[in-house]
Every structure is written in structure tokens, then in C-alpha cells.
Image (cartoon, rainbow, N blue to C red):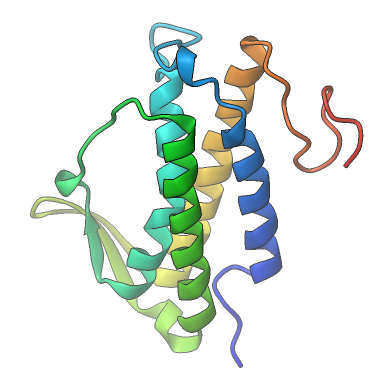
Length: 163
């Protein structure tokens, strides 16, 4: 068996930490943002919740067209967790089944007819994971600024000593 683009243990751990973070998003503060140039909390949470849904299309389709996206809206934390869980399920299934030479096939990010970039599928999904971790980290800063307990992710947090 060939290895997946992301080791499944690593994927599972990152998704578990991301879910713990999303569970804490206060849905009554969706419009809050730490700075005028920042995303509102609800939009950042929606982005983090939907990012696992990028993995399967990136592994199965030749491109994603961001012009076809629906934009951001405010959704309940429960709705976001449902979206996240479905994305994680489909991502893990794709990671298990798309391996080997298929990871070297080209994949593109497009905006309409414009190709923004093309890279091998395996590199793309690794980048998706890094991108998700980046936005999850932003989300933990938002939580801290709102005095919401931050979950332990790679070790204890100031709020969770037990890991």
C-alpha cells in the first residue's frame, strides 16, 4: 500500500483539535472581530469548518473554481460542526483511497477561466492542512480575546492543563 498525502494519524489529530476549537465558538459573537481589517468571528469559524471539505475535491477533481463559492454567512456552531464533520469524513476517505502516482497528478485553483496556480495533488492537500492549521490558530486568538477557554492542541493550553 502506498502512503497517503497526509499520514492518517496526523490528519486525525489535527481534525480532532480543530473540532475542539470550533465547539467553543460563541455563536452570539459572530460579528465580532479583533480589528477593523480582520474577518468577523463567524466568517473565520465558517472558513475553518469548511476547509476539510476542500480535500476530497482536490484529490478527486482536476480543479476547484473559487468563483463558484457562495461567500460567507453566519451559521450556528452546531451547523458548522455538521459541515466540518462531513468534510472530515469525505477528506479521510479520499486520503485513504487516493495515493501513489495519483498524488503527482496536476491540480489547479481557478477563478472562473483564470488559473491561479497548478501543483501536484499531494502538495495541494498538504497545503490545505497547513492553511487550516493557520486559520485554526487565528481562531484560538479570537477565543482568547473573547475570554473563551482555548483548547489544548499540541500540548496544554493556559486553560487546559491536562492533555
